[in-house]
Amino acid sequence: MHGIVTIVQWAQNWDMSIKEIQEEIVDEFSMFEDWMQRYEYMIELGKSLPMIKEQYKTDDNIIKGCQSKVWVHAELEGDKLVFTADSDAIITKGIIAILIRTFSNQKPKDIIDAETRFIDEIGLKEHLSPTRANGLVSMIKQLKLYAVAYQTQLN
Amino acid sequence: MIQTVFDILTIRKDFPILNRKVNGYPLVYLDNAATSQTPQKVIDAIVEYYSNYNANIHRGVHTLSQEATDVYEQARQKIQKHFNAAKSHEIIFTSGTTHGINLVANGFASFLKKGDEIIVSALEHHSNIVPWQMLCERTGAVLKVIPMSLDGKLVMEEYHKLLSHRTKLVFCNHVSNALGTINPIEEIIAAAHNIGAAVLIDGAQAAPHIKADVQKLDVDFYVVSAHKMCGPTGVGMLYGKEEWLNKLPPYQGGGEMIAEVTFEKTTYADLPHKFEAGTPNICGGIAFGAALDYMNAIGFDAIAQYEHELLEYASKELLAIDGLKIYGDTKEKTAVISFNIEGLHPYDIGSILDKLGVAVRTGHHCAQPIMDFYKIPGTVRASFSFYNTKEEVDILVAGVRRAKTMLS
Image (cartoon, rainbow over all chains, first blue to last red):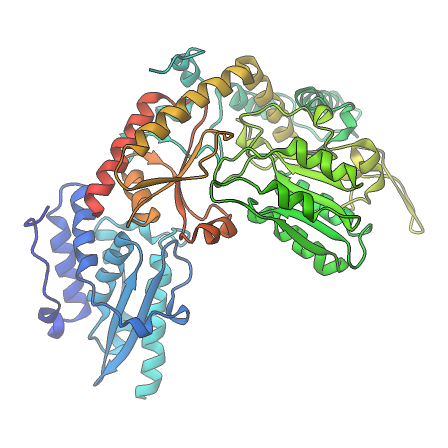
């Protein structure tokens, strides 16, 4: 799998809008022919996830509704929200990495307004079900909640 | 090499769902401990009921109602015969194991006082812990737990120490859902009876594999769900000794469970109707009977022998994978393998297996105390049925190896 796609540098995304990043992710995933390549890529993405600092891996920062543990931390840098995260499961890490790549370094308002239909387009639709054990829906909700909280702070 | 004691290919043809594909691969269904698949004969019984004699039971004078009543009551007798209950009115139709447990727990509320003790095992499903905690909150009774050992067995010396004149009720599953351990319920029942305590056994995980004889066990209450043994969901049975069922107050009020009603007083119907308020799951009860017919035609001895061979083969093949650990390593177990691979999350393994068409359960299996005991987030659980094959074990093992390569 290594070499199919080089891992996108997070830094390159800094000036892109959420929509542009989502289009880029959809493009990347369109290269894969089967689920295995998609999963292998997600596993790679998981490994490149901006790692949350140990001090933030607290029970308070765990997202409920996942079979695996997911910790998320949010911090304002200027007028942009920066997310870091971790999970004890690798595929879950890959999923959260995709979300963070989309939402991190964005303005809270843009995060609140963002669509997440691209998840469907990259063949991860099955993960979107609210009852799905990995809690993708809970993750999106939590990231948006952070955005709402920081938006209030900015106002 | 597995010596099939029956014709596995013919048996597989009885289950239409086994022909389907999942994510482009033939379905390998190894989540039987969660729910079993349904043979055509049971599906036919459901279709037959709704096509030919759907009617409310026990009250209509018309032919359809009488036909439905007859077949429903025949199903009760099939269940009675299967579990060898002395009387058919000792069989109460429920919506499933959880309903049966709550019915008994609720009934015991009127017998318990502060300081009385209820004993449960550390190997329980959540549904077997919560009703007792609620009962203790209501009555002031105290919950005691039989501890488990690392190999997934109950520590029986500790159980005997817990028993006292304060013990009123002992609850334990016949087989652990998370690990497959077969518990020594004969010893548990006899020791509880010695000090005058009643015993409820959760037979949900045992019933698909072991034919329990409630009279021989001398158990006071035994509960099962039909959907774990080739029947439909939403129906199950509570067996209770007649003397106990007469003592317990009704659980729910409604139609069917009354003899006479005035605004001053209601007298309750006789057993089993006292505990069957409202229109029951008629079709479900009938299909439950059909499921027992189906399984008994194959034979529980043959089923047990075949599943044991599958278990031994699967255990051997899985243990050959480097870093794989099986939890609940006892000789006395049903065809359930709960495992982890060192350094990998069960959720990741389960997700990849799903992509390969292999259905397993991942997580804590509603038995968090057991996972806490082992200090793990959960396990991957493959649970086998008599319609699974050695070839499916091979697909599972290859899938686990593939997952391991992808995830490492």
